[in-house]
Length: 337
Image (cartoon, rainbow, N blue to C red; front, side):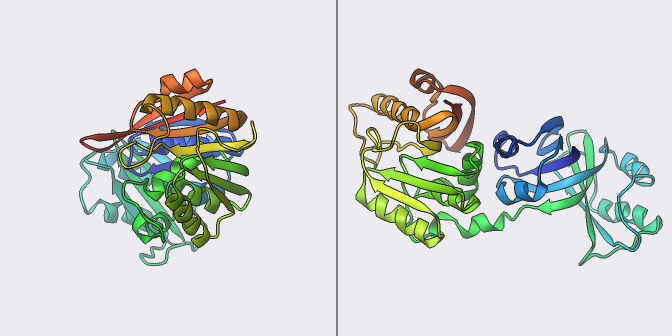
């Protein structure tokens, strides 16, 4: 086990932590959460850091911890004088300080002062191409200091922004959230289904995680089926997309390894049912039928879905609320068959 620090993005209060836990559990690795702070998690784990970094979307950096102390400047500098920063002889370093939100009273020149402590201890500085990046995270009443192991390539998600895809419609999930909810499904191989595939955002992200993941999408609208195929083809994903009623899918019972979907809201999308509630209920029953025993679904909807998920037979694990604007909040529920 190794003590790691996860520097989380501030895009959502609870999703980043759930995404990390889901990725670790997906591969059967072990973990023990030592402490959680605002945008920082300290964890003992035997996880493959590179594999984690390649999957995560809502984390900025993964560090190996050096010290955990009060976020007072004098305390940090005092601790730094004796801290083992794990540098080999001749290795260069640079110090970076991230003051999360408005925690602490660290000033702009603190980065230089902290770096000077290690320089006076005989470690050489390199501001442009250092062998080691040492990061101090100022959060709540703590300073979490560690050596950078992997930075997450979050720019890739910007390159897959909805407007940059061959087929685009407004109101879809952004790629980072799409990747996070796919990760929450704990899929590593096999078939992932999106019964309301829309423009295929979740399918694209699942397919890019691994060639061992095969994606299948359904949609009742022909233009969505063609658009999804276009997007998946663009990213070289291993896919099947079919036009059919997602309330009565031609998919074998207990055959898919994960289901992730963002329910249509019934505003500009045709709903094949007498009401939204009936539509949701029938859709969840069909999803339950298609999913393998012990596997996970992530359902995104404008309404809380816990009650209907339980009625369909699922065990609800957690729900996250994501406020989009004044008249729309998305509810992201993780459930298990």
